[in-house]
Image (cartoon, rainbow, N blue to C red; front, top):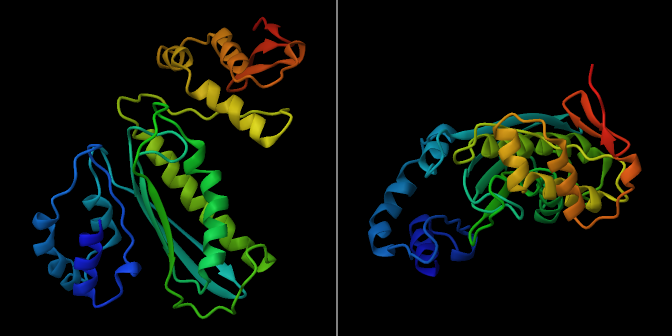
Length: 265
């Protein structure tokens, strides 16, 4: 990793600490830096590559390139966000085998960007699962060029950033859903809504227990509305539950009411 950073930095004529490294592949198999080194100069010389080309270049087991785009306004200045990502297998919080790159032309400090990304990440890349396995390698980057000369903002909770945070959340959620949709062997994309939990963290634990349950997955894959498997998964989340108040919906259809079967007419 150090050799890659120093080699590319030498060609870019920048500090090696300015190089952000992201990697995926077979765990335990080191990359051959000597095979990569001759291409560093070509990467630097090629300044015409598009976002689409970059998205295509990072595909491994993905079946399609993943990209998202949004615009917003910061104090009257139009700001653009663009992002690409890769990932389809070994997907479960925290992020797992995925790489994400998001750039904006806004003028925002690293501390503000970090706070905004952490917030968006928790509601997107850290809220998806395909196979419940995490990985040794995962990264998501948010970079700002500052080419839009918006007034300086130092407080990440400044209301002037509301539109930006909304746009960033839209980009990260879009990319996250594309990753799940491309899950290795997946034929279904589902979302899980948990309401009435004691806390947001409790709701997350219950949702993940349902999403990662092999029995729930097989029921959904087989299009079998077996709500008992949902209840089982809720129970194993180890969160306190008022069983006689439990309701389970498949779409708009309530299949379980007050902890018991709801007869659908």
